[in-house]
Length: 108
Figure 1: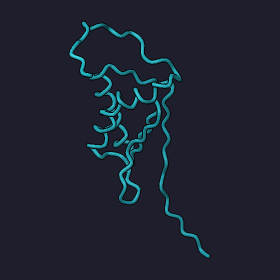
Figure 2: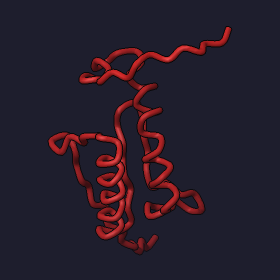
Figure 3: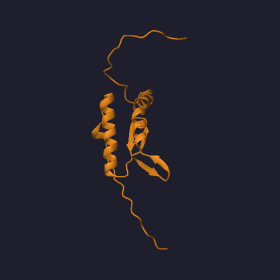
């Protein structure tokens, strides 16, 4: 079956309900472009030879940056994407964690 009918455009004022079965799928479809954009720039962290700059699951996104300046650049990419696609990130639910690498010599 092939559909050749398109409705008139209509505005959407509400998103998918919280905890709806489709929420994670629609979020992934909607946010995939951001993840691709972040991965393209490769600003995030590397674990060995594996690039891991952003991790997304359901409606959560984690940005992993090796420096404060890298995080600022990644956040700027997110901000540009949000403006382009009319996305609002909730600053009250956002957190920042700083991990500092120290070499520790252990004598055995």
